Image (tube, rainbow, N blue to C red; front, side, top):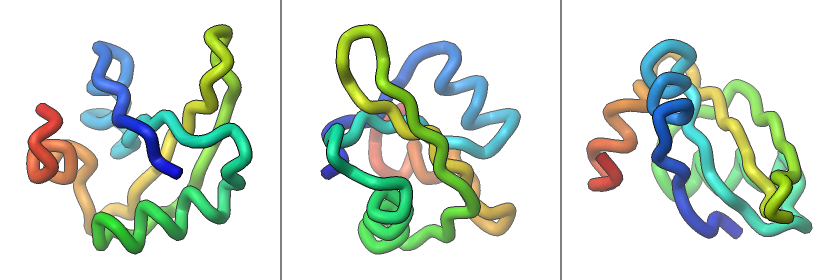
Amino acid sequence: MIRRFVITEKALRLAERENKITVVVDRAATKKQIADEIQRLYNVKVEKVNTLISPRGEKKAYVKLSTEHSAMDLLSRLGVL
């Protein structure tokens, strides 16, 4: 379901300021499925999920983590940064 993490200037700024991670997911994935998958795989609590279809046809999900979990810590722990 989760294809890859997006690491751009905007994505890193969102991680720092708004505690959000950005991921590319399957087009058929729902917000609930994305939240459940992130919580299960990475052991964090998800507050909210926003999605969009990019001009390239990919579905992006902006996943806001709860305040007790840091998006930057999660990205560092996964070796993405």
